[in-house]
Image 1 (tube, protein in one colour):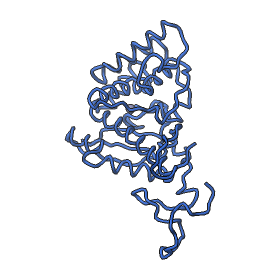
Image 2 (tube, helix red, strand yellow):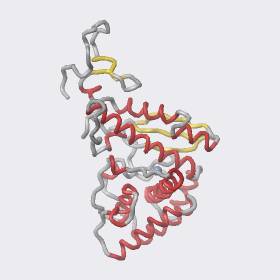
Image 3 (cartoon, protein in one colour):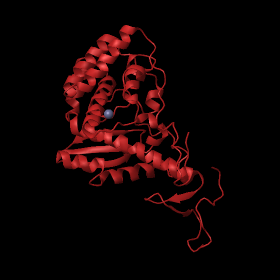
Image 4 (cartoon, helix red, strand yellow):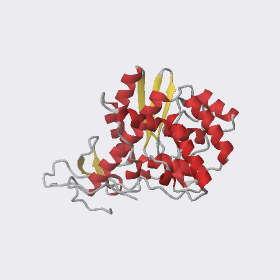
Length: 297
Ligand SMILES: [Zn+2]
């Protein structure tokens, strides 16, 4: 697990603050939909979106960065810890971009979506993955940029069809992206579902597609570590609207990643600057650099 400079709470709060600027993803969401956007840090390892009382509510989990398995690329700028914080910030921006696209194109009446899934015997998590494929493809088509999840996240061989299509979503490609060893027929059908999800016109069409998916491949759940690593998440609606699909994304029990701030008793301000090692008198002008502290790291 990577060590960061800042705690998860600070990283998430900082990411939300920059996303709320007019040019940030949440600022854009407000402008483009003409609706208010509320945002807050939650106790989870992912982001989520819902539409409540004429406002978007977007949250970012204070454990989002624990899903990062790949280190930051090498850079001359800053210490390794600063680089890891920047790497986490870039990851958070993509998570918030994803939630922005739910706000732009996902049906806002989530209780109705959840009811449709229940009616069709579709686990909400299956709908959620296919909907994620749809919205990320729309984002790519409109904004031109990939999400590049593989910069942060490791993709493991698929255990079943739903895991395989989740892998395609994370890799943003069909074919090898699934990492599923299976029959040609399964492979072909899975690729069709991926393409059809990308091109579905709206969330209702995705519910129908999810029903077809479950009829074709069954509804075996992906391995639990896809949940604990934040790849499989219920990020639409909340626990009370019938959409909670048994995907425990809101686990406050996931420990924070190691951070110099928590582990070495330093203090990081809202701008990611080191205030000074905790307990160091502010009058100490001899404190030349924050890395000169003693503490386990
Ligand atoms: Zn999503």
